Image (cartoon, rainbow, N blue to C red; front, side, top):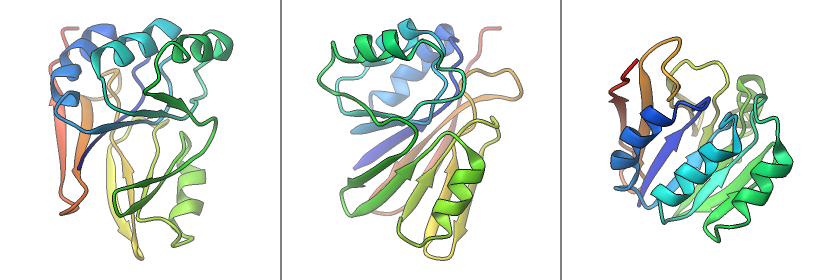
Length: 165
């Protein structure tokens, strides 16, 4: 199974449009927060037909409209502040916040813990778990990146998306 992991779009719909070409190769998407506007969630949902798992970020302000928009798509799953998933043989936790992710990865309850928020790509093995931040799609503080993880092999690819800014 291929898992696309992304975070912190912050309404950069132009980069998201380019990223969808990579995302469509995945079987599932994990989104670690900060769509910002509800129309960005719609763009992702319309551009990817497989399961999309979402946790809230600190800039997802209009949760009412984000929730309403998500309800239009059976394949979009909103998990609130924390998601706990089983993807294939992997136990996965998702949050937006690095400090919460650090606590989760230290518990050894998960094979993979994903987070966003600080916009800094990070991939580290901690004990028996992997701690992963895909970086930002926004492209404000650094390159626009997402990660594709091969569940069977554990191999990750960080993919830089061309940012037209």
